[in-house]
Image (cartoon, rainbow, N blue to C red; front, side, top):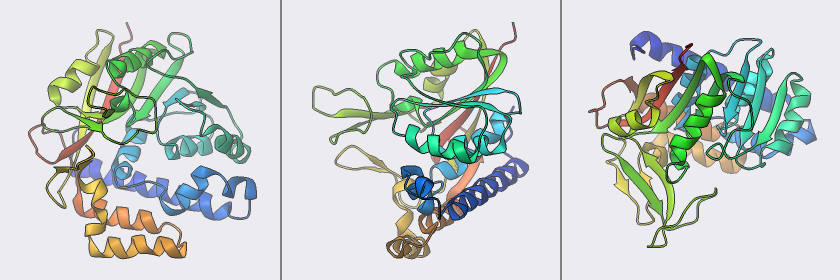
Length: 307
C-alpha cells in the first residue's frame, strides 16, 4: 500500500526540486541555441516548467514509475517535462508519444542534446497502441485518459495493459472528486472530442472511487493509488462555460503569487512557476481518503500480473 506519510511527501518535494533544477538548467544552458530556444516547449518552460496541477503529479509519477536503465518506457501523451527528464538521464529506451505531432519537431531538437534511445510517435491510444503485446517495461500517462470521450479511457487503459510486459508497471494520473463529475464546455477543446445535443463539447471526467475502480479493475492487473488534495483557496465553482474552478485557476488570489505572475511581462524566467509553487506549498497534501472534500487528483500505480 502506498502510504501518504511525511516521508513520502518529503520525497515528492525533493523530486520536484530535482525536476525544476533540471528544467532551469535546461532553459538557461540552451539560451544561446536558436534551434532549442525557438521551440514551443522551451518558451513554455522558460516561465512554467510545471504548473500548479503538475507540481505534485509529475514527481509522484516519476517516483512510482521508477524507470531503470535498459528498460523500455512509453509516455502516452503526458506533459513533456517528464519525458525530457527521462531522456536526459540516459540508458532508458524511451518512446515519447501523443495524439498529435505538435511535440515532434521540438523533441527532434532535444534528442540532439540528449542522444540515446528515444523514439517519437503519434497515435490515438484508445484506438490502439502500435506496439506488440508486452513490449514495454513501464508506461506512464499524466492527466490524459480523463479527456477521452465515451469509453475511450477504458479502451486506452486496455491498450496500455496489452503493451505492458507481465510484471511491468504503469502509472496514470487523473482528476478526482468525492462524487463523479463530467465537464462539458461551451468553447472548443484543443483535442479531438465529442459534442452533445446542447452544443457543448466533452472536456474531462473527474473520477470518484467507484468510477476509478471500474476503470482500472482488470483480471491481469493489481493496482494501488495515492490522492493529491488541496486546501481550497476558494470554494469550487463551475464557470458559465462549464469549466470547474479550483486552485489551479485561482493562484493569483494569493497576493505574492499575483505579483510574481506579473513579472512574466518583464520576461523574468520561471516567474509563473514561482507563483504556482507558492500556491502548491500552501495548499497541497497527500491522502488516501476518498471522503476528503479537498481531493483533486489521483496517481494510480498499476502492475501487470506476472502470470
